[in-house]
Image (cartoon, rainbow, N blue to C red; front, side, top):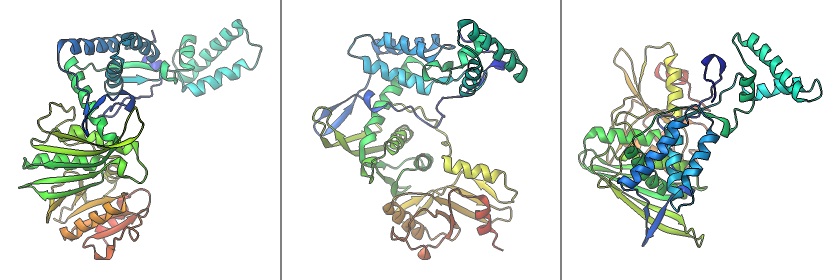
Amino acid sequence: MISFCSALIIRRRFRKLVGETATLPSPLLIHHYSGDSLVPKQLAIKPANLATAQTAINLFQAAVGKPQGDLDQQLQTLEGEGTDYRIKRGLAHILRNSFSTFEIVSPLEPEVLRDRIFTLAASQAHTPHAAQQHLATLSAQLSQELNRDVEPIHIQQGLYADLKENRILTAFEAPTPEALLHRYNLSQVQGIFYKASHVVMHLHRNDPGEYKLMFKYLKLFRLMTYIEGEADQGFTITIDGPASLFKASTRYGVDIAKLVPAILHVTRWQLTAQLQWKNPYTKVSQQKSYSLSDTCNLVSHYPPGKPYDSMLEQAFAEKWAKTKTDWVLEREVDLVPIPGSVMIPDFRLVHPDGRVYLLEIVGYWRPEYLRKKFYQVRQASNENLILAVSERLNLEKAGVDVRNTPAKVIWFKDKLQPKTILAALEPA
């Protein structure tokens, strides 16, 4: 058992952020064919499956305070030689990545600690007695440097604490067995979208707040989308999948998968996806399809409130908070209706004198998306809209002429700085 005296450890967290979802890796996805469609594996909420889930949860609870390697051995024993090993492995993957906190426990960063002990070891011939002397010497040095007691055992435990199998499970927030099964079923469905080439979502007439939340998630995951419709009739959202990109991106496929729990917060909806799926036996890529609607029994683990900011937006918002200005940056922005579609800008800028501007950050995307984006801006005809455009984008090649854009266009290089926006708001 590792000692967790807070004065003796350095921690490096490996837990997923709240906004992320522990999607299953491809080897743990279980699907079967039904004609031209794919059907993901779903575990019924019944006693046998609940018992399997509870057993996995119990293993994690018993492993708190122990190295990950010990837990992995227990999980391997749980798998046994049964044919359902992929199901048990999938449940463990979700518990490990969504409910567990693994940390490096060491008096110093392990790499620094190794350098210190190896330097001492190089001073004389290696013997068991000399090794104990080195540990005692370094223990005394660190106790003085860190102003706390560091024992030789802490050094031994910390030397290779950065190896995956030596990370310590320091916290585990146990879900209920039912919640774990729901999360597993959702993850199997999410895996369908890793190979999507085209996704179309129909959001029927719903509460406007549901649209707003959905569009925020679309922006959060930075998906290449085109939105048509209006709040009174509903919206059609077209999303380019990873298989449609010039170079297929696994990360982008995972971003689309993250959208599935978000749509479950919408009352009336349906979606269809076109897939480029490789047959596991022939290894030949095939055209498949997948459909899902509000009648599914999937359960979302996303909060029904607003999603977290993307890294790009968050970085800008944090810098703005440190800027001395009367302009207030607001993240809660209403939908901007345009003929046949809708826009939801990244931020609203409000001045005490009543002036209001909307800010849209255009950092990257494909030429087709850029053409659609600037077409929407022209349709909106909003003179209080500011477009912050990355200089990395070749708008001319994309067929976009910013001179025809009824919005303020400003340019930025790598990161958008508040002073650039303020210069546009308060011209000299």
